[in-house]
Length: 284
Image (cartoon, rainbow, N blue to C red):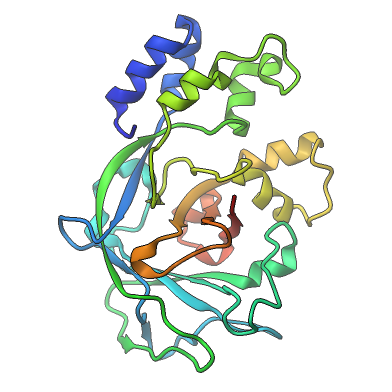
């Protein structure tokens, strides 16, 4: 279920009226990236990236080069969902240390700040000279797959900090009775559907827990108690920038059918400080 109308129908059917009225304004637009989909080209999964001559291939110091994951042409998606806040031109390139280089010896533990070097975003503004860059020795590029796009409406996930903020103490894990937003029928009705669920902006589709708490842990140093209110406050400051799902078309598999996520604070997105984005990943 991906349209505003579909989500509104589900809210009216499965939620009390006051809950539906409070929940519907929380919906956010996102841009679904469809691998091998029909429609105008907006980017690629895999292959080799176009990098300016003066930009080095991202490397995790002490571990090795990162694998190239995806490229998005910002001009091709500009205006599709203005609330996403992407640049109107240039390219976003996504890299991740996927275990190829060291045969899986090192796994990116996203909650630990020092592991954030295992993922990177490179923003290439329009007009920067450059060309296709060969993949470093020790890495095999993923299969190059074209990406099309469509606008979707997205909802905050099961334990998103914004839901706690809006619905208060009654939304807690121990609340009795269980909050209507956690009802099985409602959650099933608003499911994003089958993957691959590649996406720009909107709310993340977590494989396990809400990803905002994981990047908040990294932002706060990696040692905050998970029940600490400071963690929830920090989690509320982060927005999904991109998620890249496991995808057979591109020969991408993140753990056990997992997903990669990059999140960013709104002020850094506005200022195009993509080097301040944080990363996490999950699998089933």
